[in-house]
Amino acid sequence: MSIITVGIDLAKNVFAVHGVDDNGKPALVKPKVSREHLLPLIAQLPPCLIGMEACSGAHHWARLFRQHGHTVRLMAPKFVIPYRLSGKRGKNDAADAAAICEAVTRPQMRFVPVKEEHQQIILALHRTRTGFVEERTATYNRLRGLIAEVGIVCPQKITALRRALMDHLEDLPGYLNRCVGDLLAHADSLDVRIAEYDRIIRDAAREDARSRRLMDLPGIGPNTASALLASIGGGHDFKNGRQVAAWIGLTPGQYSSGGTTRLGRITKAGDRYLRSLLVMGAKAILSGLGEKQDRFSRWARSLVERRGYWKAVVAIAAKNARLAWAVLRFGEEFRLRQADA
Image (tube, rainbow, N blue to C red; front, side):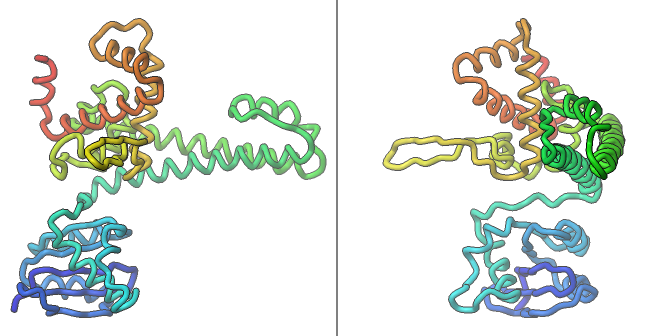
């Protein structure tokens, strides 16, 4: 019997592999496969369906397996858990591989798009920049906490905080002056690094034609455009723009029963970073409306009046997610149709 489906439980050094034949019977069960032996093992198999959980290194392995003719599907770990026979086999790597092998064949399973190497490089820029921003925020919070111990309470706004710190710097007792000075210098160095990454991301976005088309949309700048392109690619893994908005977590959760439709708050599923970028872009749109009378501005203004500010922000962010999918999916054709509308 030939192996048609394989589930792989990924790890750093030791992997578990579970393969089944066309009758659904286990035909390849290897609870422990070393890292250097995994690719040769998969390469010798006939083209089959391979399932893995979307985790660290999953996209790298997916690209390697595709080069040998296999079809690779990545799944969120939470969608695999129901297929693990925990009462029968317990929680171990072999049971996880078997659950992955079962889950990847389900017709209603939702999969994670496999990212190419250049997409992961762009996302690495965004992750590094985000880490520096979080570190800068933590540094300023540490500063406020330290000087609060000597009775100096400063505002949260960075410019006002720095001004207050400089006013009291010479009055700080003992080594506290040294601590505050070093933390301010560290925050300055983080500002330089963040600005440099902003420039790199901006240049990368301007060099790509698809990113430039995304930046033509209101509320989408270089950061959002490059992050969207690196996350969803050409949009071929989604049937329509509504799926993209739901994937990012900008659609309301549904709690319907007995023919009554109940829609709650947005699900906040998916990529929090993408969602925050789209929301910030929507807020920028509303703050810059002014007296604009174009079709989009009139719609946004009426939306705020009818549904309130925050619901309008989410609605605009979801609309931008759908428009971004259309731009990436149809390219110049979408631009022409949009211009004719």
